[in-house]
Length: 138
Image (tube, rainbow, N blue to C red):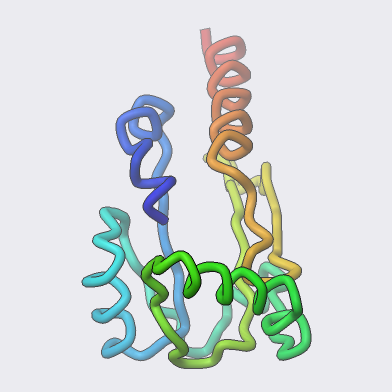
């Protein structure tokens, strides 16, 4: 989230609204927001309706894959802050870009917790939408 938050000015220029959706309780939501200092709106979906609508799965095997365990081991060894285990750690997330017409322009349901598009990939999709919009709205 911090990587995306570092681009708030460019996101605003691209007329982009970033929203975080979680299924967690208001307690864990508050903890997460305090730890991440996320500047984006935060929605709580306790029934996981959005998760189902976007095909996001839960999987203990993929959530705790060797790749994920290696990531946490390296983070601990390097002394990096880890947010710790909380809530349903088997629920996988995803990243999506939905345009003004409701068309999904980027869909990346995570195969594991580390499977996220880069900020550069997200910005490239958004820039492409901006170019398309400026070309056809003139």
